Structures are given as C-alpha cells and as structure tokens.
Length: 422
Image 1 (spheres, one colour):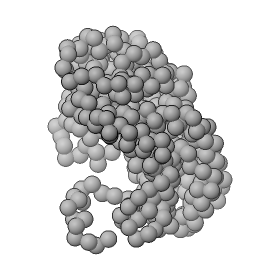
Image 2 (cartoon, rainbow, N blue to C red):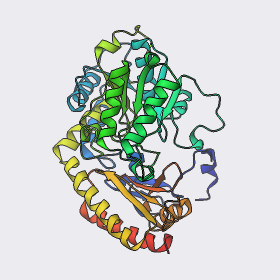
Image 3 (spheres, one colour):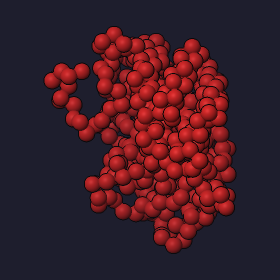
C-alpha cells in the first residue's frame, strides 16, 4: 500500500492494519488486494449489527429518497422523533427526552453542559482510567493515558478524578469497592465542595482504560453518593451500549439507572449519530438554544438507528453476544493455564479483554500485548489494544458473529499466543 494518494491521510491518526478495506459484510471485510479479514473491532464497537446489515442499509436508502438533513432547530421530522422514541423504549430508567448530536465526545460534552446548567453547579467528577472523548472538555475528563491529553494543556478546569474499582490492580489487602469509594468520598470532601458538584461521570465498564469490569456494588455506591450530594449521575454507555454486553445497556447488569445517559458508537450501525438521554425536568431548566448542533439527528442516521434496534431485538443478537462472550472468555481462561502471560480474562457479553503481564507478576507487558495483536493481524484478524499501560488486548466482535467465525478467531488466538508468549 505504497501509493502516494494515501499520503493525504495524516499520520497522526494511526491505524492498526496496513491494508485498504474495499467492502465489508457481517463479521468480515475485504481489501483491495482481495484478502478476507475477520473484523474483531467493528469500528471500535460501532457496527454492532455487523457490516452492512441488510435491514439497516434498506432503511437508510429509503430515507435518502425522502429527506437527508432534517435540522433539529428548523422543524420536526418523524424519522428523527420515531428513533428517539425507540431509544426511550430500551434505555433503562424514567426518561422522556433524547437530544441527538454527532459523536460520543459531543454526547459527553453536552451531558456535562446539561448537568451544569440544570444544577447551576460548576464541578464534574470523573474517574482515573476513563476515556470520554477528544474535545478539549472531554480530554479534561479523560484520564486513561497521556496519549489522549498530553501536549494539550491547559485543559478546562472544574474536573476532578477519583479511583475506579479495578479488582485486578487493587492491593490484596484492600476491598476493590471500598478502596475506590473511599477515594471518591475523599475527592468530594477534600478537593471540592459537595454542593458544587454538578455531575459524577462514569463508564459502567472502562473502555480505553482496559475493559475494566467493576463490581456491581461500586456502581451502586456511586449512584448513592450522587444522590447524597445532589449531583446528577451521568453513565457513559458509548462503547458498552446497544447490546454490546448482552443487555441493551451495561448498567442493567448492576441494577443502576442514571440521570443522564450518553450513547453513540453502536447507536446507528456505522452511521454518525450520538445522543444524550435524560428527563425534561433537566432540559427544561436550560435556556433554548444553549445545547445542540448543526448535524445532530441526521435523518438517515436516525433511520439506520431505528432499523438497527429492530435487528438486534428481532434476531436475538444480545443472546448471541452472551453466548459468544462466554465462549471467548472460556477459551482464554483455558489458554491462561498454558500462558501465565494472561494475567486476567474479563468482560461482559462481547466486550472482553485479556490483560498481559510478565509471568509470575502483575507487571504490565505492553510489548507482549503488541506482539499478540501483530500476530493476529499477520493472520488477517483485526484486533485492538487498550489499557492504561497499553497491555490489554480487547475483543469487540459483531453481536451476530456466528460460531464458525468465532472458532476461526480462537484458532488464530492460539497461534498468536505461541508467537507472543513463547
């Protein structure tokens, strides 16, 4: 792929596979050179229904013949409103408003703005290891690695970070929930005033931080603390939503609901769309025109979103995500017996990761994680990394990945382990 025309794409973006994808279908994509690749990233948990799902594509094509850009400030559009109502049906909690925007970062940014304006408070609390986006505000909220915020200081103020419940890296003498929650209470009492906190922002599984699955009690305690201090709880379901963990939204695993939910990625099966879901009691406290954007709620993307929700539900994709996720984690748990380089296997549904360490320790081994990822790519299986120490390999297959594709992946993973962990 040494053609000069690709030099127009800046190197700062970076990419995992040195190929040119020409078309894609289901769990596979095909390159200009005729190669067939298994996609275990699906656009970083975006194409949850698989590439070019027929129902999604048909809905988008039909909408294009009607209206493409139904700008939200201009008029109502039934496609957009219907998509919002369909989302309200699946998001757990007592919600009645959906604000469509474009990207995950914009969803988080507007959620924080909604919390600030509706409470008239200035402070946001996020968590160490978090990733919430690449805008200036969301970089301040992000705390997973310097790569996402280094060289951009000064970042917006009024943001404080508390410890996230990370069982694998909690000292053996400490309870993971108590260890994290005590730090959250310390931040609230020593770094800011409780009555200044507009919102607590949390991922129900930390994404870029390493696919860290906290105990349910952690999320329940965060909810309790938000209520105690009168702050709004924002749950960031951007990567974990739309069936990714075997339920519509990850918070359902914990028995917790939010005051504001941010959603994106899997919301529209590859079309650019995001939203914040909340209640009119908060939106009504904001002055008209103080939230929004030009392209928010694109009609074609909304048509794709509604069709994608139907496809996930009607085709049993969440059940498949649960089944295939158990199969994936079972495979790596067994492989762990041979390769102690696999420090931990974790995940819910098809949002899974292995944390790679130096055998006999918990010392992160980023080099071995890269070697594993590269060995997968050499065998035409697209796999991603994550983690604060770049030592976690993450797996995000399409929710409808079939058994034969998962079996193929496991064969590649076994070969990759022999190369990376020799």
